[in-house]
Image (cartoon, rainbow, N blue to C red; front, side):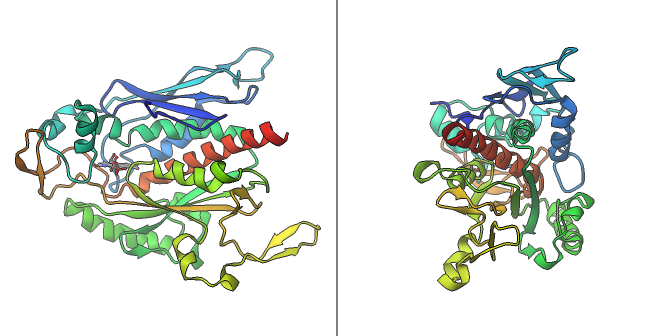
Length: 362
Ligand SMILES: Cc1cc2nc3c(=O)[nH]c(=O)nc-3n(C[C@H](O)[C@H](O)[C@H](O)COP(=O)(O)O)c2cc1C
C-alpha cells in the first residue's frame, strides 16, 4: 500500500526525500546484457538538474548518479552491462537548506501537498516538501535512462510548448532548437518571448504554469493492450504521477471534442513499400490502447509553482488562520525541468509495454 512503484515487467521503485541524505530508484525487470554506463544516465540527469539558468530553482545539486547494483563488467562483457538483477541507482542530496523551511513547519502552503500529507500520515517532513518534492523526479529520470536502453529503436523527445498564456508557433517547430534555449522550446522566437515573460514573473516572486509535449517515434504497431492495459492509459497515469501535472492529453486530446468524425479520422492508405500509411495522427499513435506505428504524442499541463513570495491565506496544523510566504529556492515555472521527466516517464511506459508485448505474443 505504499505506492512507490510503477510499471509491470519493467518496474521502477523510487525512494528518498528532498532534504534526506540521498534519493534514488530500484529498476527491476531490466533484461540482461544491455550496455549501461554512469555517463549515459548522467546525460539525462544533467538536463533536469537545478540551477542551470535563472529560470529554474537556484538549488545547486550536481545530481551525480551512482550505480549500486545490477551492472557488471569484466574482460568478457565489453564494458558494463546489465545483469538482469535489480538495478539500484543513487543520487546524493548535497545542497539542502532545511532552515529555509522552518516557517512552513506547521503552516500549509496553499497549492502544495503539506495539508494532505498531514491529513493522511499525521507526520510530515516539511523540509523542501519531503517526499512530495519534485526532487523525486531525479530518480525517474535516472530510471528513464535505463528504460531507453530496453527500446533502442524508439526516439523519445519532449518540449515545452506553452508558458502561461504564451504558446509556440507550431509551424516553427524545430527539434534542434530544444537544446539551444533555457526552456527546451522548439520555437526559437517563442523562447525569446518566454524569457521576457518569465523574467517578469520571477522578479515579482510569482510563478506560472506550462504545457509540455512528448513524442515517441519508432514505436512499432502492436505495443500496448486493450481494456485495462491501454498504452494511452498508462502514459496518462505516468504523466499524471509527475508533480504539479493537472491535465494529460493524447493526440488531439481535448481539441478532439471540437472535431467532426471526418476531421478526426486518421485515414489510411498503402505506402510505396506496401505498408500502411496514416494521413493524419489525431489519435496520437494509439488506437484501442495499442500503438499504430505512428508517433506516440502526449501532452500535459503543469500548474504554477505553489511556493511563491506573495503572502497567501492559509491555516496551520493547530487550526489557526495564518499567512504563508514561501522562502527557499523554487522554480518560477516547473514546466521547464518537467521536460526531461516527461521523456523519462514515456520511456518507462514504453519499455514496460515492449516487454509485456514480447511476453504475450513473442
Ligand atoms: C520539475 C518540477 C519542479 C518543481 N519545483 C517546485 C518548487 O520549486 N516549488 C514548489 O512549490 N513546487 C515545485 N514543484 C511542484 C510540487 O512538487 C507539487 O506541486 C507538489 O508536490 C504538490 O503536488 P501536486 O501539485 O501534484 O498536487 C515542482 C514540480 C516539478 C515537476
